[in-house]
Image 1: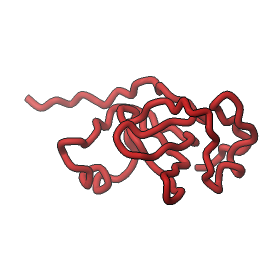
Image 2: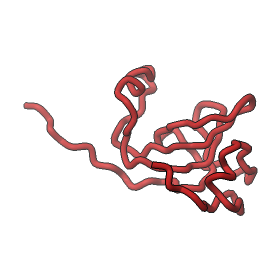
Image 3: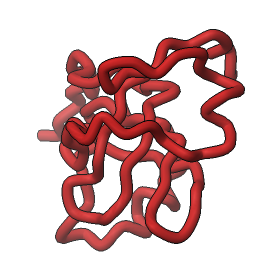
Length: 115
């Protein structure tokens, strides 16, 4: 018998404006959008090695991300994020386009109409 269960989104643990770190890889970023479940391409999802491929039925976060060398946009599953407690701002050049203030480790947005 085939399982026709629809993916049920979970409530997002993190919020827009929050600074987070990747659980395994050395980068951090500020969340600027949240998808209730995976919404990228199947090709992108399949490109992740199966042994570390995250489930689709969880929130996915769009980040203005940075590592030691560069800044970029990242798409990360909730299971692979942890809060960033450094209280350091993100240096990504688009931060000022989307957010107004940075206080107590949280950005406050001014223009989040991205889609």
